[in-house]
Length: 227
Ligand code: CTP
Ligand code: CA
Image 1 (cartoon, rainbow, N blue to C red):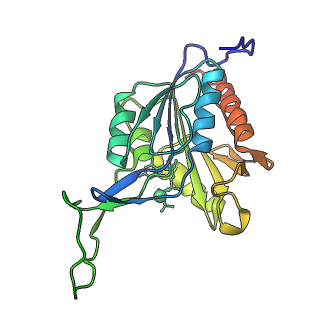
Image 2: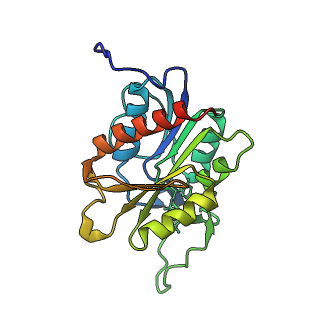
């Protein structure tokens, strides 16, 4: 690695980051998923590592490379993601960036579902996935600092505040992903940090800049509070 003389305010700290989508199988060849490139989550893992944290990145299926400096665990489904995150506890920091599929097919088929002449397709019966952030936010081994994301298309701050309380997070990084913003799949992000202290409005930044700033914000918050 190149010499990096940057200060290491997260030296001795452990962090867990989730990133990417999850894939929920319908049968061996089909799945349900959210749109997510993994760019933002991977950049956050890299930036926490750059500040000295020992980072476990739990990534759903993405096409981007594993980030430098983090230990990456690859999973497919929400249930696998929850298991990998739980296995990585205890940790000082947890940042939930993954676009987890809210639902999975109740019973996925062991064999490829075939079309049947003259019959329409069978309906998919869905069931709710575990909420990984909410589980960890209320866990007996809860990390000192728990950060969630909220991708919203309307009522961004109200929805983020509700998620902060419901999920037991310290910060929610809220962003407006309505189609006209062009954020989905792009390289830029415009976020607001919602906590019990209020709302911080961040300017339009690259996803790498958001990641660097969030890692610095996390370090500041951990090193300030006598947690
Ligand atoms: N999250 C999670 N596990 C889930 C669903 C969401 O860990 N099963 C996390 C996401 O990684 C994100 C935060 O919860 O950090 C908010 O995700 P979001 O989809 O915005 O919230 P939901 O509670 O699923 O609400 P909705 O999709 O209805 O807005
Ligand atoms: Ca959701």
